[in-house]
Amino acid sequence: MKLKVGSRVKSSVCTTEVMVIQAPDEDLDVRCGGAPLIAIGEQPNPGGSVAASASGGTQIGKRYVNAEGKLELLCTKPGKGSLALGDAPLSLKEAKPLPASD
Image 1: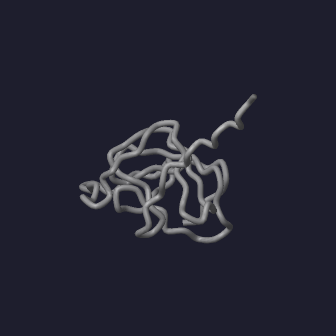
Image 2 (image 1 turned 45 degrees about the vertical axis):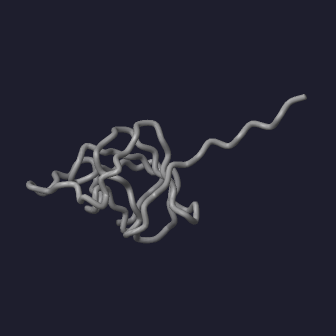
């Protein structure tokens, strides 16, 4: 799936919805709950379920990034599945610490 900045996609096996904040200009295998993400308007295949190995869940308002930092997704609706790029799980993007003031 080719992701465009600003587009919204959803999980095909749980309630997770995300917005693309940053993405490389190439086809990506982005998954949630072990299944590929689909466009917001698409209907998921019936009978799909979250894979046990990808059931960490997502949190609303949190940003998820890959290890290289080239893909960033913002969770707009939480769900039971966890996000991954292929088989590599995406991690929560940590807030940058504020500089110390004297």
